Length: 246
Image (cartoon, rainbow, N blue to C red; front, side):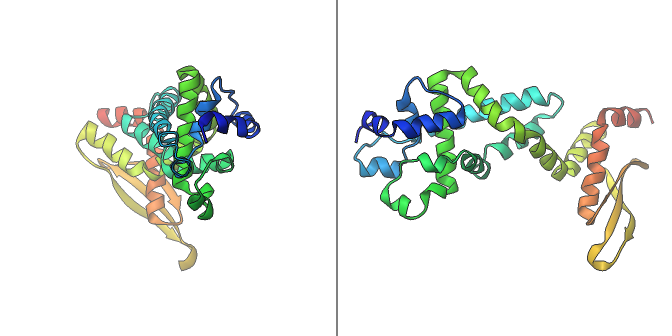
C-alpha cells in the first residue's frame, strides 16, 4: 500500500491526531510516514516508507529545541546542569511517557508481529515515533513552528524535572563549584538523629573552611546532605563572595 493510499485511508485518524498535537500539516504524507513502524513497511513491501529517517531528524530537532527552551528559561544554570536536564527530558523513558499522554500508540501502523506483542505500548517504539512526529513537524513547518510545539508540550514538565534533577545532584554541583573556586571540597556533619529506628529524622550541615554553609533535614543522611547542599546552592553567588572575603 502506497503512502498516498494510507493517507486517504487514515484521513480521519490523521486529522484527529493533528487536533491532539495542535498542528495541521501542509503535507499529510509526512505525518503518515512518521506513524509507520518498520515492521509495517516491511510487510507491505514499502522499504523506506517507515519513520526511521524522520526519527533521526526528530532526535536532532528535540536536542536543539529543548536545549533552546532550557537556555532561555534558566540562563544561570551551568552547561553541565543544562545538559543533564535536557537528557532527563529527551530519553526513551520520558519520550515514551509523552507519547502515551497524547495516545500516540493508537495512531501507529504496525506489522502483525508487533501488533500481537503489544507494540503500541512499547517504550522503544513510542519514543522513536514521538521523535519522528517532531521531525515531520520540522520538515513541514520549519524551526519556529516545531519550537512552539515542543515548548507547549515540554515547558509544563521542566520545572518539576529541574527540581527533581538538581536536588538529586546538589552535592556534586556544590563540590564542583567550590573546587573550581577554592580547589577544596566541602564536608558534611551529622548534627542530629532523632525518632524511632523505623522513622528516623536526620539533620546534617554542610561545612566549608570551618564555616557552616547550610543545614538539611530528611529521613536519611544521604537525602539530608543533598538538602543541605541544595540550600547552600540557592545563594551560591553570595556564598562565594562571603568565602572569598573571609
